[in-house]
Image 1 (cartoon, helix red, strand yellow):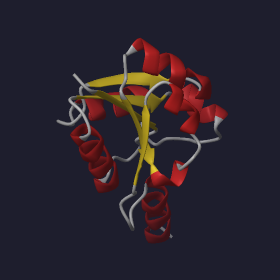
Image 2 (tube, helix red, strand yellow):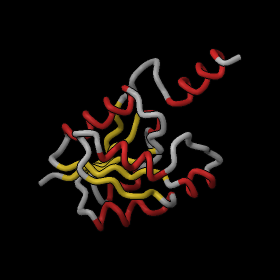
Image 3 (tube, one colour):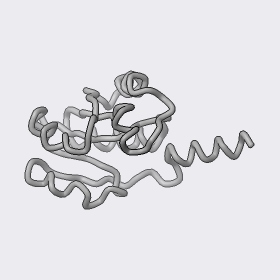
Length: 131
């Protein structure tokens, strides 16, 4: 069985997230999604609309996702790859090169992002509408 892992906040789930999850799952048989906890987001100066538990529940309902785990720090990726016997690590192309150190443990793939959509764009658009 080929295992794939990806990481993210996955707040305000949108078509770009679904495209990433679908393409990540297509690379293997089993998709693990590591979701940033609220505490980790705070360290990154990010604030999600939905709590970690809600984002986890939403992702568990997505047909491409087999397992959701917490992302609690930047350093856990090597341990996760080893613990879950991961074959492929996937991230959006905006992270290109940032995780190449994982090539010593698994294949690293950067997938193109869906044009014109992001959680930041959704939040910005909502702010404009509500002004």
